[in-house]
Image 1 (cartoon, rainbow, N blue to C red):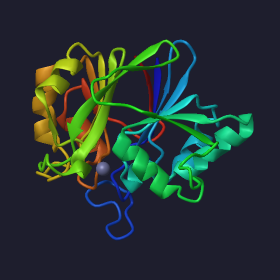
Image 2: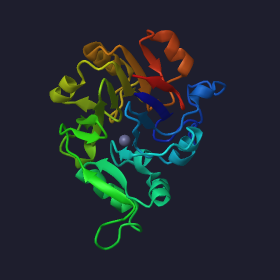
Image 3: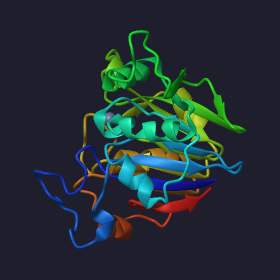
Length: 258
Ligand SMILES: [Zn+2]
């Protein structure tokens, strides 16, 4: 399976409109980060997109405008879903509905965002929404995908506090996560490569920060971890110097094989 990090930036991207590059070296192109999304090409040739951030169109053009077989969402925040309208292009091209996998709550976010495409009956011929549930595997082609419940904050009673991580074979994508329940950690056991959202080096109320990420990595022990969703304190070269080879920052357009 081939994984391409389409974007590895935080919710405002880097440079951000108000704070520029922050502590990141503006001269290193790897520190210019669009919002986070991932493209996976499975061994049976399926292309799965995880999230459609506001820059998804340009990210996919840079990736060679590949056809997409399915889209999966982590959660409904603008920086992960805001580019959804651009996905219409795939349905129009083949005159079919693009399969979209997401939780019930995120389906509501999706329809709200594209209200003008979802008519009174709440249906759109462009998108085929499949409702998924945490820990209930689903398939795209021959590939089993396990949704992992994540807490995108500490208030577990808040429905907006949920996000989904995904395990596909020996690869897992976990971003916008602050806490994980024990079952989540159990399902991550044995992965080879982990793409993990680490927004900052300081305590943050919605995301894990670097030292917590290192604890999790030490517990799960993947062969290789790449970081994504990295913010203004996460300078590429500094992280490479400070961390072992088995933990690397990613960058926009970075590809790896699992
Ligand atoms: Zn988020």
